[in-house]
Amino acid sequence: MEVNGLPLHVLLVHFVVVLVPLAALCAVATAAWPAARRRLGIVTPLLALANLILVPVVTDAGAWLQARVPSTPLIEQHATLGLTLYPWTIAVFVFTALQWAWFLFFDRPSSPRRPSAVVRRVVLVVLIVVSVGLAVGSIVDVVLIGEAGSRAIWENSFSPTPVKTP
Image 1 (cartoon, rainbow, N blue to C red):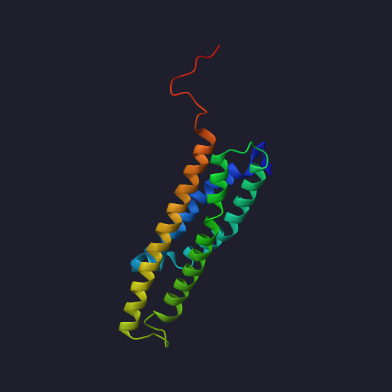
Image 2: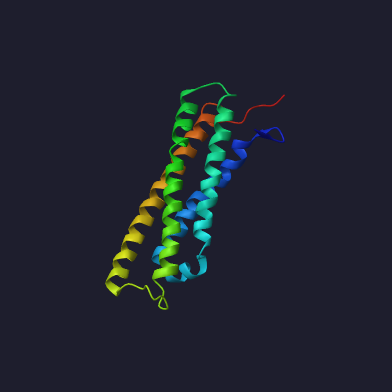
């Protein structure tokens, strides 16, 4: 899979590097900050849905690329770590969809199904804790995968001093 002679993986991976942390941070903001909750609304689960679609595409493009480069331990490590992102993506999507539904259908003053203040407070604390856990986990995973990919490409492949050109 190529675009203009470049592997699709190296192009699409930039979207994942931005959108996965963005969706996770939006989930935290939605849980913890009422103003963000009102502004973001359905945007957060839609970002998470985009990741749910995009991550397997990037992973498949990475597998395509891996079959076309020499195998090294660093590439193997990057490929192995790359497979760990999809479960985080699924978890963030499910969480953001449930969180959106909670605030839309239950935790509104006009909702006839609105639970007691104590239940709302407990759910809010759970949402904050879970969103922070998912954000930390998914962002750390993206960083580890990106670090491994960068090392696989760049380690020992450049000179620390300028190279003389003929």
